Image (cartoon, rainbow, N blue to C red; front, top):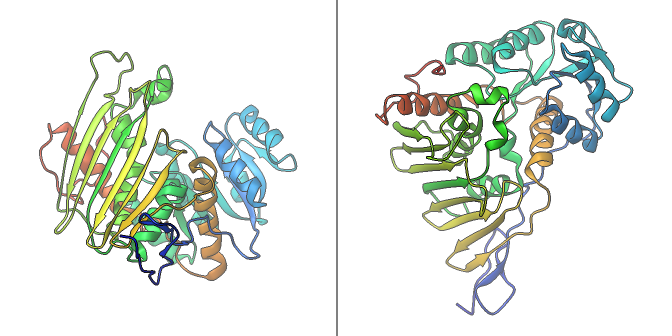
Length: 373
């Protein structure tokens, strides 16, 4: 196709062999224009390093760090925000009138109580995922935030990984038309969890890891609810870590299908691949890791590959907090709101229930609490 035509989304020929200029899409994390509130971080475990690194790069103002282990909080203060105060009791953070936003990065079982306390104290909240372990609590917390005129957002940071962010903006822009299928295949090494508290989570892959992919699938499908989900898990014959490191799931929609395949015990030749097929084109993203991805848009005019800047572990955490702050500044609901995240929880809960039932179909929304094993 030597005479490619341009489109309204920036597709224009740049070479002789079907290679087009990639559409320019706003995939970078949102940044508030002027709003810079006092932020308090509750929970200073390992993941908090990525939170704080992202906030520092955005020039945000973290004024309080809290953890039952004061040593952990002090370590984060010294490393990122040396002027912040350190606390061991979250209620001391919530009592500060100069703190308008709290980032809750504790373990899952503690989050719902802390979210409710923060909302009661008049604080906007960014919660680590999942923000609740049952749908009734999740719905109640979303309603409580609405009733108090506050914003409750969820740290689904995968949405702002550069490749996933570009994919979802391309879908939203109609560049591939109606989405018919999405395929996720991920082969990576998760053996670092051996001997950590993560090893005690039976559905470590489907629950703690795949929830990002369940969330991206939900976003790409426009928030629709799947008709049914079927999932299975297995252990490799050579793994020593306890949770099943092989997992697969299929989500059927009225007019689309999403397929997930995960292998968490791949030490060599790792790959992360996403394929989104629509009525007008296809999007592909692949690479050797979560942070190294090449995206290609395939359409009748030819192929286009954007040059993406950034990586998941910085852009992702910038995006979740940045979107919350922009929503507060613009007086709107954040795109990563608790209410928006309900479909993701439904899909995750249903997949785990299906795996526990040997792959039997489960209807999302009928499993109201995270199955615990």
